[in-house]
Amino acid sequence: MWLSLCELRLMNDRRWPWLMLVPQRPNIVELHELTPLDQTMLVFETNTVAQTLKQLTDCQKINTGALGNMVPQLHVHVVARNEGDPGWPGPVWGYGAAEPYRAEDRHSLVARLRSAMST
Image 1: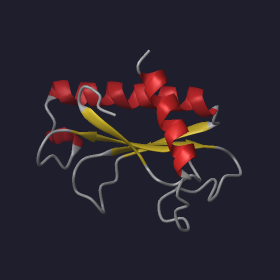
Image 2: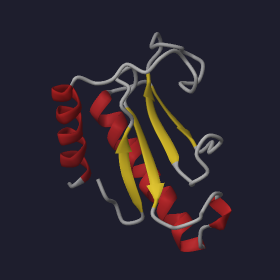
Image 3: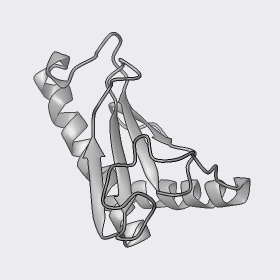
Image 4: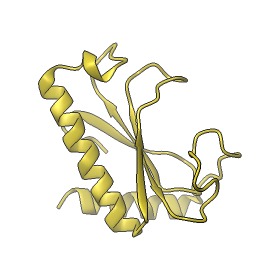
């Protein structure tokens, strides 16, 4: 899904509802490299996505992070977490092997996200 600044992507790992925002600005690696207006928009879009994900999943906690160690392009992860999920309370990064969504489950989640984000 395209937002004002970012492309919103779903990570293909059904263990956690996990979204990623990718600002559509070339050669940006760090948050401070964005213009002040783009920084504000990234925070706004991150908060909007986090709030939507929390409402859709009824999760206990939203984890937000921008590590960028594997892929240099600036991107922000937004992950819905619950006590007892795989790896809790540790981070999702590097915990076990990804478990891909079944196509129909992925399509359903994406449709719910699109609907919630468009209102």
